[in-house]
Amino acid sequence: MRLALDEARACLDTGDVPVGAVVLDRSGAVVALGRNEREARQDPTAHAEVLALRAAAAVTGDWHLSEHTLVVTLEPCPMCAGAILAARVPRVVFAAWDPKAGASGSVYDISRDRRLPHRSEVLGGVLEQESAALLDAFFAARR
Figure (spheres, rainbow, N blue to C red):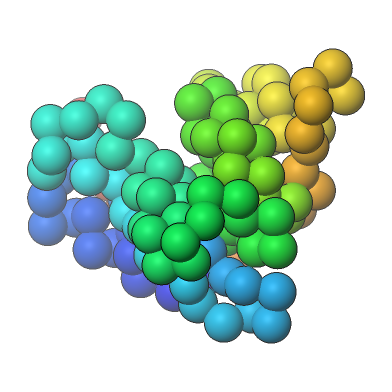
């Protein structure tokens, strides 16, 4: 999670919401990194999770990431939760809960919805205070 937080901090240079993501293989080795780049790329889909999943697929040569874990600093939104399930990622670990758009247990629970063909195990709240403080400071500076 600390590596994901480092990725999130790197967003501050671009004006993007500070969210970072890391994809790990089954042994815990880092496969790929991602950070929010919506502002930098002017791309509404350039969320940290999506970019990390794309990078992991490129590194592994396979979009099936069924042996991987995604670590992210903020609870995935509905789009990202869908991308996680599409990539068949079995485990998601995140820091801060997102009470406005979270889709892994707070507002929605897409990641564990039994009506869908794939689900992910979800663990939230890992280094939650550190991630929440980073997000709070980012938004406070813009108000």
